[in-house]
Length: 145
Image 1: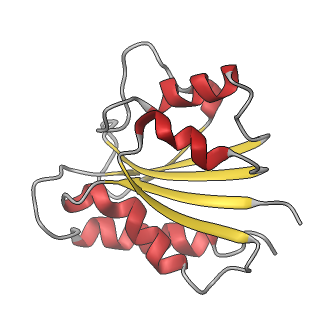
Image 2: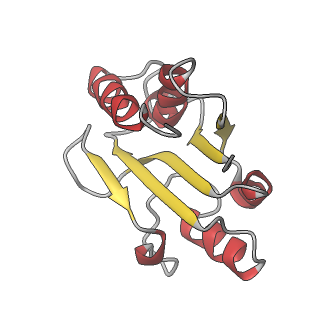
């Protein structure tokens, strides 16, 4: 069976945990061939989680200027590793994916979903982020079938 891994990226701060929320919402809804992982700002250690994976799905909070709660599908080839950082984490996702490709560790199929957020200051997930997480979990519920 082909290995599919869905990774929710985030941190424990407000809407930045939206990727984790999607993972929680998917728990129990996907076949056993789909691996669900929540990571706290992994930086380049994300590459470790790509080993042996054929289809990688990454979910992260983004701040691109879109309307909060909007789902943005990103193509790894289109990510700009130059200066525009889409994530709020230490190592830009684009740089990590570029490094994985250079090392021959990038899975053949990579899907990236961004959830537009307002900020990360609150202790709880905002209603807008919760609705977006629920919508994205519904979209991803067909994985591995």
